[in-house]
Image 1 (tube, rainbow, N blue to C red):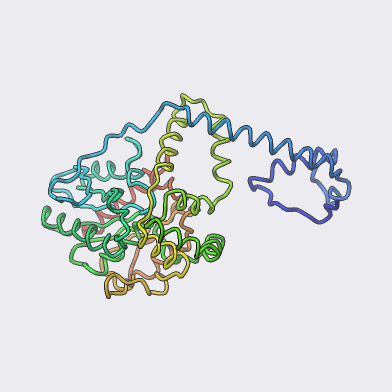
Image 2: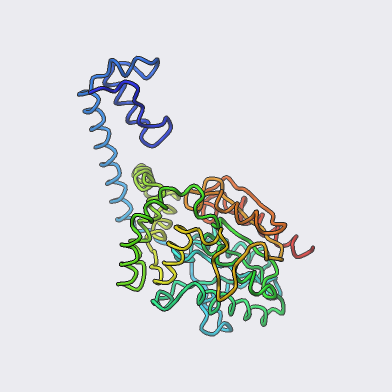
Length: 388
């Protein structure tokens, strides 16, 4: 067995430490110099690497067991649905009665309460505290996964009617905020009904679905026939399918986070927050069949958005046609929506303001620095946009 010239890992990667430790054990030295590959003992190396792998697996299993047995759960009360919105799934977060209305549109693939996950880390409650009148569109209702629902119906039957109801109540158009794929969707009403949108905020909103996504795109391409067969037979893309797709964006994440959790004090604030966030991640939703086709095939595989081939009804959704003040908040550590994907949208919207934050996709909404780096700057920008 020859190891000469081979370094099948990168220093600093999740695999780096156990491999380096195994090499040191198998050479009786260290990685210093260039001759380590010539004096390595393959048997000792494989034995050391096997033990390291077993240790990691055991720690991972301990972390999963600790999570499953933890008795802490989210305690934040869910606001009542807004009665004036009739059958629309809109949650009213109160705030000032005469406050500027804000409608927040979440992603399609996870439940909306990530925007209100903790009392002290809640984007929705932060908006209410700043004097706005915030509403959250919560479309994770079973009927919205029916096979007849498509992206057009989400926009024309949910988002636009919600904006119309808000304008009637407040006498002014709403600020429209979209998170993740919800941000992609908000471009449509901003183009189709500019009379209903006073300003637009895009939070990690993807647009160029081919940006830094070669792995996922390849998987979708080779799996397309199977995906289409699943969607056709079930009328939806089931939760497990959707979750596996996005887990594949960072294959080592699950192992890393549960090994870290295994080392936490179960009574600590960090452990309790981990459990709440993990519960949300595991509380996924399916995608209605036509919606799954649009998102997974038209957007991720064919990049219809960037090509300006995405249409709602007969209207092409072109970011160049957005006329309201627009802010794009782009997390630089995002593994779900590559920064370049979100930047491509901001570059197309005339006069858009771009704010980069050194956070991840979920951290920008529920992390310890979210309030200071996202909630407060977004609220400040909305206030300033109103005065212009």
